Structure formats: C-alpha cells, structure tokens
Length: 464
Image 1 (cartoon, rainbow, N blue to C red):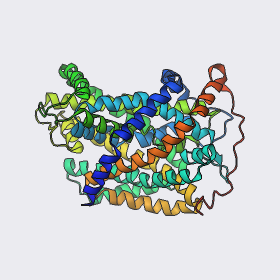
Image 2: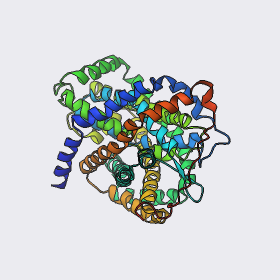
Image 3: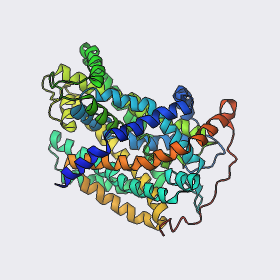
Image 4: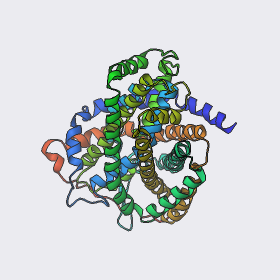
C-alpha cells in the first residue's frame, strides 16, 4: 500500500511540470551562458590541473572524481535499464539530451555554490545550494528546505538504491544472500567514511578513473559484437523518442510521454544536473575563481550521461534486438540489464558485476559527503557522528528493501530536492552570466579576490 501511494505521488511529481522545469532550465541556461558546452574540451583539460595558491580543501580533480563517484552509479547501469524497460528505447535519447543541455545547469549551480561558499571556524570550505539561497537570495528558509531534502535524499539515493542494486544482482547471478551483502557493504562504508572528505576523495580519485574506463571498454567490446544491429538500434531509439512504440520486437509498449518521463527521471538520477548535489563537494575545491571549478564540474555530466549512459543504452537496446532471450517486456530494469549482459559469453556478467559493485561503493561514498554537509548546515558539526550511524544503518536496510519502492521513493525525493535548487539558479542567472563574462579569455586564470566569510554558527547549525 505504501509503495502504491509513493508511486502515485512520484508519477505526479515527475509529470510534465517537472519535465518542463528541468529541461526548460537546461535550455535557458544554455543560452544565458552562451552555450557553455562549447568549452567542454577546455574544461576536461582544466580538470587535470591544480590551481596553486587557491583556497580549498581538495584539488579540482579530486572534487570532480568525488562528484563523479556519486553520479556514475546504478543510474548508468540499472537506471538506464529501468528507463528502457518502463519508457521504451526512446527514453535513451531523452536521457542523452538531459546530459547535453544539463551541462549548462551543472555549470550554473556550481558557479553559485563557489560564489557563495563560506569558511567554517576550522578553516574548511562549505557551500552548496543552501548557501546560495541564504546568501544570494536572503532566503534562509529555502536553504533549510533544500538541506533537509538533500540529507534525506542522500540516505535513499546514496545508500538504499545503491545497496539494493548490488544485493539484487549478486543474489540473482551468484545466489549470495542479501543479508551477507548488507553486512559487507555496511562494514566497508563505515571504514571509508571515518576519515571524512580527505579519505573519501582519496579513494574516489583512484577508484573512479579505473571503474569508468573498465566499464566503457567492456561496453565497447559488446557493441563490437553487436555491430550488425547498431544501425537498427540507433533508428529504433530515435523513432521511439518521438512516436509510440508498440510492444513488439522485445520492447515494452510505450508512448512519447512515458519515454520522456523515464528518460528525464533516469537522466536526472544519473547526472544530477539541477539537483544541487555535486556543488556540495565542488564548493570544497581549490580553485582560483568560480568559473574554473564550474567548468570542471560540468565535465561530470558529460562523462556520466553524454558518454557512459549513451553507451549503456546502446548496449541494452542492441542486445534486446539481437538476442531473443533478453526480455524488454518485463518492466524490470535490473532483470533487463542482467539478461542483456548475460547474453555475452564469458565477459558479460563479470563486467556487469565488477562495474556495479565499484560504481555502487563509490556512489555511497560521494553521497555520504553530500548528506553530511547538509546535516552540518542544519544541526552543526556535532551532528556528523549521528549522521554516520544513520548512514550505515541505511546501507544495511537498503540491501534488504524491495526494489520498486526504493526507486519510486528516490524519484520522489530527487524531484522535490531539485525545485529549490532550480529556483536559485534561475533567479541568480544574472550573477552566473556576470561571473562567466568576468573570467573569460585570458582572465580565466585570474584569482577571485572576493572575501570568503567565516561562518560563525558552524558548530550549531541554522537549527541549533
């Protein structure tokens, strides 16, 4: 009954109003920033360099990989499968478009996160949508709402969904009991988050490049094996995005509305553009000025959705076309993904399992930091230990919870969390444009001379 109620609310939240709000913001900020996506290759090059002499806690690359650790996860594997299973193959195109245009929103939300970040009493940098709302708009109440939603969303998106995906797939493919997965994941997560952002970013900077490259190479091997149907795959994806797809040829019957809804929902879940999550860690980066880190953060959406989600979609749709044993009619994204990779002899299931486990663990680490920053904003630094305990419990429980309830709950929280962040981006778009122009050309290497205020109530929090 609870699952049905959440599913109905989720369906309402992710109707056309949310689709228009998110994609409309992506397009609006694309034009307001002068199509900032054109600088993607400059941004990729910039992400590999350090800004010496800049204030912050971690390097730009560490901030990027920690941000990627939370976005490159089940959304790229199970999430793409769910989009196709529920919305048809056309959902892949809509998901990809959220990545193309979403880079502008990721750039914009990171820009204001850096612009309005503050320094704690112990010298660490703190920022995010809640500080942009409080300092940029003078709306502390909106910052409290965002931080509260984000802290709860982290427990669902960052813990329960990730742990659940691993538990389900290990049980189906290797008959490992979920209780065993719950215990192991909880212990590993506890060991990783004890050291705070330094240890978390250190793990992410080493794990993310490896797991991303491993998964991409594996998918490319599968695409080569399915080369004879790739042309047909692209045609079906494009046609299904703009016209009704009958339940034939191994695909679930769908409409344009379903393709849009699940493509956008899974796209946001995957790249988080518009959610305001990754700016929470970007605000801790050592960067000369807001534009440089905003550009670096923009590359996360490029790698996550424009590259990895697209490759995943091509793999799944081509497998459904080529292998009769892959069932696209079940409506279950996890089963669809397992079946598709299982059709590839020897390497299919191992690639899926290694990618899923590493992606999931890195996502758990990244989202923990997001939730912790929001908890500190609300309740002060003393809340960190309590949030750590709650986090570990959520990892454990998430491994044992039924799948559809978790997905629908996370969709609901993601949508609610995005609203105050998008409002901040839209209202502060003039500041974003001004900062973009200020640090253009040779001035992109200029140091931001804006004084960063020291936050006096760090220990107490706004609700302390």
